[in-house]
Image 1 (cartoon, rainbow, N blue to C red):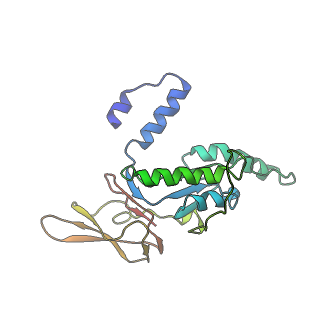
Image 2 (cartoon, rainbow, N blue to C red):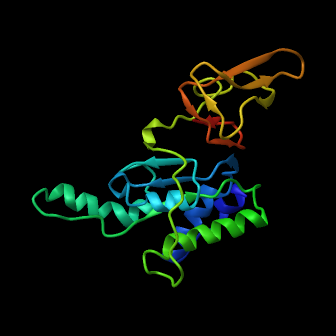
Image 3 (cartoon, helix red, strand yellow):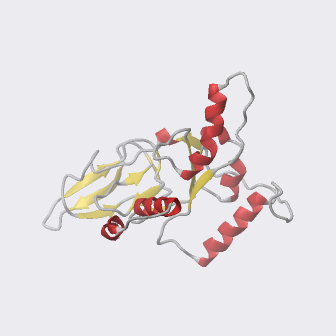
Length: 215
């Protein structure tokens, strides 16, 4: 897929954006719990979105790197506010990126529940008609994006070739030093992959080379 995309030359501005997005996303398979990225100034205004979707991690940043689409919509307003400290310039929109688990986790019940959750979020804001109900309990605390750590094996690249055997799954609480995976050499021996920080393991990437779990 990557080789095919590299051979294509987009023509229009829209095609350039689509091509860039597909190139970034084509190999990003992973296994993850529902989580949310949004701007620090938008929190806690986006708390109802996180609660309605039952997200298990909320990651906040004003500049996360890579120019994600949600920041392109919302960052100009807090940038203007920072440049004009004497002028009240609130965020003019609520933009967020919702990570819907993984490519391999597509089930009818989840689709129905996620759709209903988005409708619950939109209804109190007057964007769709419907009965407004109570906001569910938020299942996690929001943390800075810098608190998330991608665990490699170790640090940057795997020290050995072999089969990755996960010993922790998304949603597990881990502490620094816990074994969260092993690289098993089919010819004998194994190498342990350790958590580098305390936290909740939120995702396991399915990529080569393996960037590792996130906590």
